[in-house]
Image (cartoon, rainbow, N blue to C red; front, side, top):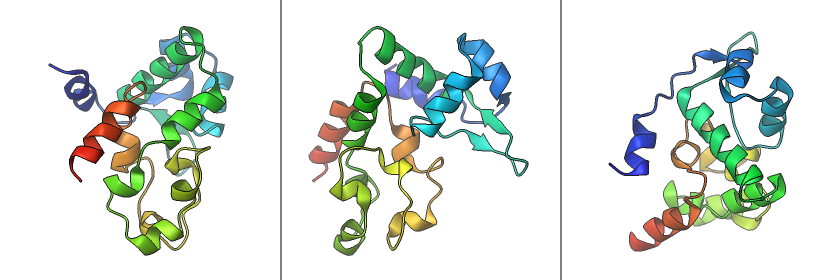
Length: 151
């Protein structure tokens, strides 16, 4: 079974409060909030604004932590790497959508961090978008090659 298959089997059902998620990972609530404010994770938010995390979110944060601690990649580097994901190809944006997309014209932030205006992503919840859901820390090259093969 490949890592991609394992990741797809991990639950995306948001069940853990921020304190429980932080405890499961051995990190502080402040660190989780920082990852959110930096655009590395998108927790589910209830109407009351309470954050909830899924097993998939937990795995994402573990990968972020590994990248920072073991591979010495900073947050800016992680954001730049994630920004290389060709989201416009993955969700089949039109030429006009691409013209109106900061993710297409920039390389500093992942697509899910931008406010989408006048393009296809305006109607898509970034947390539920396939680009965010299928993003695997450490697998950006493979995703780019996968997209290029389908062209």
